Length: 237
Image (cartoon, rainbow, N blue to C red; front, side):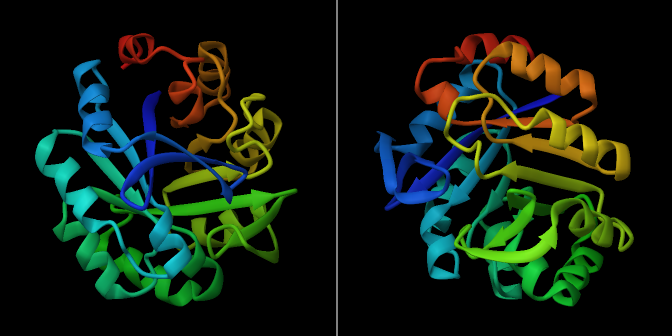
């Protein structure tokens, strides 16, 4: 299973939120590139980079941070936040993103999302399926839809989606363990590469997610709060 640490960017700094609430922002490092280099030095190969400013502004804001990390490391980066137009995809890929994670546009303009997937290929586009109480959320997790997460994933699976990041917002940043039961249900009903995100607090959580069939796991606050040692994560890569 792929291990993917997360760096969330707000005002150019490495931060973490709780349940996506911007008012809970906590700065962990003023220099995201420094964090990325530490990940790489400990054997990490992948990075989940989120432009929180972009998610709120509906356009990419922190492309320089993306460029700095992509040019300053060999990490394989999936980038999300603020991708609302085709120009945003161009910005992301031109600045070093290997993949992009797209959620809001998939909710609001599914035909546009499917067009991007056909244009760039299923390995370049990751579906962001962020949910709260099973309902898909969008616009920086501030807008609730009436879409059930499994129905949402199934609809795009039919269009060819292969890679899905699913974040249970109620678990995000809470350090209470991932939504294992939800992921089991998704994997039993959908044929996708599922990337689990939210709530991971221990190496045992990672092992459980691997056992149930998740293709990858994104880990954020547990690293920054010292609950999981980055050296231990590197040994799993």
